[in-house]
Length: 534
Image (cartoon, helix red, strand yellow):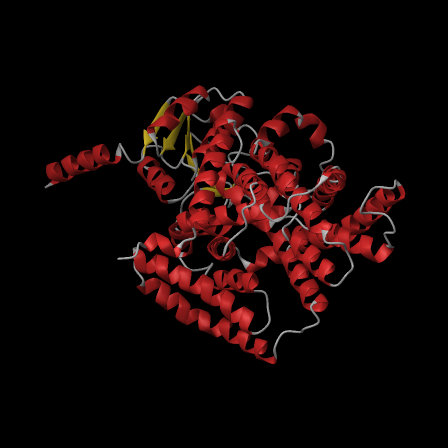
């Protein structure tokens, strides 16, 4: 009997092992594991390994599931806001022109690969490096538990506008327009009612997971069939389900598969090409432009009246180059506009931008706390409605994170505190639902130091703050922000693993509730109460 492992090339088992080892080392030194996966790609490429079919399929499936998951959390109206489409459009034009000028200056300096460079070629390079990576940004936001925060929604909105521009560029340069059958995609709008009905009937187990994979892969395939980018199809199909009550549950069900398959994506980036010295020098020069690209994001965000901290963190989320640069490089080299060595340049610039941006994005709050006064100088006095100051009645307890756990905590404490309890969540539609049923909930981000300037005096009167955010890093960050704000009240937090308790207590949390271990104790207490009532 043949082993099922024979369906996988022996090299694939090797890259899985090396990916694990490099990811493990990265986490030990305080870096996100994706930095280790990129390093594993370079190690494999240096050893002469090539990305096989299994790796390529894994990478494609990871990106498809990622974009489908983004769609599940995205509301169309968020793309219509000026701070999203305005920033994306102006940044695209401004940075493309600045990058083009920068590349021309490098050509004048006599760098290899840049001699005899004309303006058209420089514009192509500038356009390729204008974009930021959707895959990277969403992966980082998921890791720090910030995928529903204001800065995350703004960042993702900008990335989607960029992705639409990228699709248009690919269509034009490939010399093919979408098929006439693409008009049939409009039928997806009324079809969403059927999809919503099916999602309601799938339950909460493996059928839900399978339904999500079918929609993600099927949506991508349908778009490819009509000559449109498949990733865009996965994104839009996800958006059709975003308003469904089970959309968040579906996204969580896909999380493990998405995380696993994305390892293949970061490996393939690292294995794209191994640069020589000339390619490395040019890539490092392009990397030196990254701070200007990020500063342009920050300047535009503040111009559109975002608070300084939101603009700061959103800029760090986008402070990288996009895998779209590799696509442009492939098109340009095939057309003879660029020499093949530029693929290696784009690959190393992309990989290094990920490695630099990852720790910056994850530690953005710490940097903001350190340079708060300098960054706040760029903030405009005018406020968007969502950032306006909030006047609140006397409040004794604040619950951050109004998901299922946070809502249960809120409801359990509401009667004891006679309405002097406040819920805070980053998800605007979810906040609206809570308000409709009478809960006192506002939009806010506990990890954002600027949140407290919107509710002046709140910290001085609150007795308890409870952190029920969806990720340990988010709870820890919120606790650190409270410590920075010199909060003197009492602090509690939820946790999912016992080893998280030590870091929470070090950040000032006096009571940490283990959602898994303590669930049985809570059940027994409720059972005893039920028996006494009976």
